[in-house]
Image (cartoon, rainbow, N blue to C red; front, top):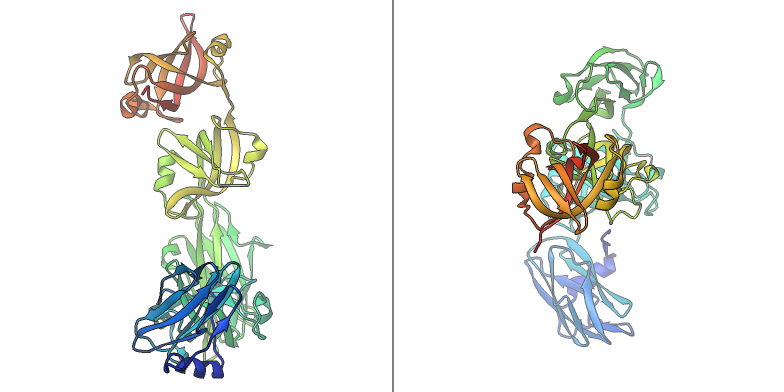
Amino acid sequence: MKLRYFIPSLVAVIAAMFTGCSDNDYDPTYLGEIRVSKSYVALDVNGGAVTIDVTATGPWTVTEVPEWLTVSPASGSGSGTITFSAEAAVGRTAEVLINCEGRTQRINIIQGIATVSTATCAEVNAGPDSKTYRVTGTVKSIANTTYGNWYLVDETGEVYIYGTLDAKGNTKNFLSLGLEVGDQVTVEGPKTTYNGTVELVDVTVVKIVKSLIKCELLTVNGEESNELPLEGGDIVATLSCKGNGVGVEIPAEAQSWLSVVSITAGDTPTVTFRAQPNAGGDRNATVTFKTTDGKKESTSETTIYQAGAIIEGPIADFLAAEVGDTQFRLTGVITSLYESDKQGKSFYIADYSGTVLVYRAEGFIEAGAKVGDVVTVVGKRGAYKDTPQMVNGTFEVLTHTVEAVSLTEFLAKEPAADKFYKIGGTIDEIANDQYGNLYLTDGTERVYVYGCYPGWGATGDARKGLIGTLGLKVGDYIEVIGVRAEYKGVAQLSNGIYFTHKAAN
């Protein structure tokens, strides 16, 4: 949610500077539900505190308080006082809200005289919140073209711009400015820090110097595309250039697979890149084009992608991978649906090595898969708050439909190697604690489970030890997935896959 910033007029600044300096100074502001003795609070530049009186008809709370300002108390009821305090600082403002029974009283806070400081990106990042900065840099990338969220970069670092005002000071009109990646721009606005990210909020654009160079088009085999195939090949960047010559930079980490093979001259030069065959997962490189007119240097960036092989393996390998564009193919049992996803496309799958959330896989709903089914999905390694998940996924195939049946129903089925069932019962005998051979009963029927493995895909030694790992014992309830088989005419569930269990106590 955006913070709102109060930028005082000259009269308001003068009034705020003298607020609290005299015992006779009294600026009461009245609403029916809440009254305050001052709606402007001026704090000393050396730090300090100012107290105002508040009278309300019910409970009230103070909200939208910046990190540098301390408010005590932050809530109350009826009559009382509120103290605003801050450490020493020069030139910052804020607006806090006092909410009571649906009405809002705004309190404007000023510490010193708010001035605009010209700064580098590094100085903005190191400076105090709520101070207004003017900074000049290059548009590195644009994240949102409605509000105008983008990254500004200079030789000292980068700053995230959260909201850009148009020429008339309006929001949600970013495209009217015509800003593009590579343009040099001067902006000014107040700094805040949100969830650890430094932001300049609702900036005013002071000056735009259009870039001398721009990537107009990427083509592969004559067709417009920014993605090379798995086997590699050439991709051509067509530029517009108003400078003298073109320079190209490829990131160091991409130089082993991407190189420049030719550069043509003119107002519309071309740069041909060559990519080596890709034996790994998806990869990309953001390349930089440079030019100069003798007075200033301009840059422009574009990203080249190359498809990679889809990596197949256990979920544990996926969890250990880095967040990125590499595609993974995972097969496992759906253990539960992700209830927080209102679209109903997200679910958890597990194999013998681990469990992971598949977030909004396309095709999942259409496939009609359910909890207990064995499925295969393809997607990228992502994360949410450092928790791994599969993102941009595709529900590739419903590998096996699993039918939940009672022990009586299971015994009545015909043996079939490709038909999977889920059965549950109480363990009444453990025949082999290494591979999990055991007997299940529901009080009426008894079924032999030949192998209870830790999860889908387990082979070799990975099949061993589930009984000890989970501490399973006679009397516990367990659900197992497997096929209906027979041994010497006796029915059994073969190659069982552990699903869930409940201890006897």
